[in-house]
Image (cartoon, rainbow, N blue to C red; front, side, top):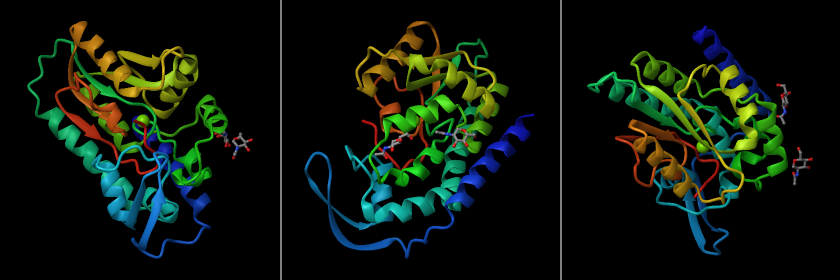
Amino acid sequence: MALQLLRHALVSLLVVAVHAAGATRAGGDMHHLQMVTSTAGTARAVASCASWRLGVETNNIRDWYSIPAECRSYVRDYMYGDLFRQDCAVVAGEAAAYAEGLELAGDGEEVWVFDVDDTTLTNLPYYADTGFGAEPYNATYFDEYVANATAPALPEVLELYEKLLSLGIKVVFITGRHDDEEAATVKNLRSAGYHTWEKLVLKPSSLGSSVVPYKSGERQKLVDAGYRIVGNMGDQWSDLTGAPEGDRTFKVPDPMYYVG
Ligand SMILES: *[C@@H]1O[C@H](CO)[C@@H](O)[C@H](O)[C@H]1NC(C)=O
Ligand SMILES: *[C@@H]1O[C@H](CO)[C@@H](O)[C@H](O)[C@H]1NC(C)=O
Ligand SMILES: [Mg+2]
């Protein structure tokens, strides 16, 4: 069953990849030194899209609004190529090895926190249609995409999810999706292969946009309720920072957008 779903997810991703294969490939990682302007108005030099991606993944580059225009084909090729898959496999593999090495109490209080968008589910179909993060965020389209409930699982994370459950670790999803998107999110998680969870925490529509206070506050509630957060995984640093972070954090690669 799980394998079938995994295959289904991979096929979905491949369909998207074939869809976008018509575009020209990037000429390489290196680009001429160019200045790009962020929303904050500061000019930044992008000498290499690979270096830019490393800066993004390590949280050295922050508060960026969209990917540098000249890195559009680089990001597309990364997302559809082997490297993204391999990078995801490294993250999920390290997380699985860490979880397997834990001395678990097995008391039902050990939990793993997952973010949803671009962590357990991939929004690559949406981003493929909107320039891989080069075009401005289209809230109307993204809301349609969420309501559609057809986001595929990130296969490596789904595999980790199954491993955690088999170890007796419970799963808690903490998502920036709003509570009025609960039905679509439940439907999508289930159809993507995530069949069981301890809690699915959605953001109250009344809450502002700041992620770190919301997510860390929800983790604190888990700790206050007696849970021990053995692991925490997300595609944004704002999923991972802010006490209590969890015993270990794992960053899923995502060069397409920044959520502070
Ligand atoms: C945003 O998405 C909606 C719905 O798909 C579409 O009708 C609209 O043209 C898009 N806006 C832009 C600026 O691309
Ligand atoms: C909704 O799902 C259908 C069927 O998978 C797909 O063809 C369509 O592109 C999706 N629309 C959005 C906005 O995600
Ligand atoms: Mg996310």
